[in-house]
Image (cartoon, rainbow, N blue to C red; front, side):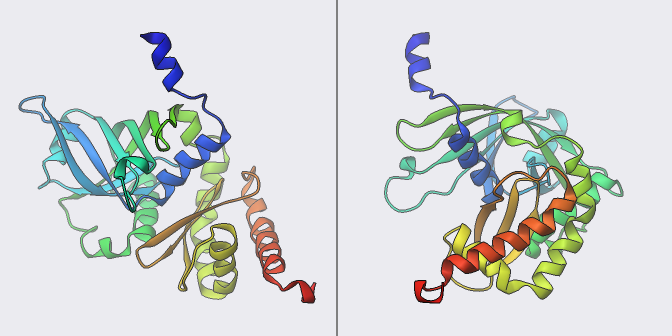
Length: 259
């Protein structure tokens, strides 16, 4: 039995990790499973999702929702991410995360950062984010199961999904000014990132978040993920990387006769 199970689970490689991070970073919503305090029974519901700068999922929930008191009573939870497309929904990739939830205290640096990133990603949530009965929870991934489609199952650990080290705090301090600058003055470059590096179509792309691995781009309800050629080791590397990617993307788009 154990041997058969091992045969089903593939060795986790860089491609699997990138797919898992893409599902995590591009998710607009997910299915949250908690334990009902009164009965201990599982309870699943849909929640809006964003990610902290290190990759941990963020949710903004009301105390009126059944899952919120459940998380406060027992922080163990699971979050299923991945949107089905055409055809068989089971043929599309999905990521199931086993997490520990922690409620972020209003007024704390962690809450300010999480709220900023959540609202950058989900601007319509500004209508209720400041209401007293709403709280932001950070879901700390412990491990995850990735199903990349039929016959493509992987097991991932926290380091496969969450970035550690000084780069996280360093980049968090400069992320918002960089996002606002790019969206105010360099939307042409953002369009290059979306079209060339993510293969996205359409107009109106803006940057919703920057992190050590790459950036999240949004256009209405559409989301795409762009990875940097190499993860950033320091925040000062961000600008040169963005400039180089814009330059190389534009060069690749030129007709051969112009090169």
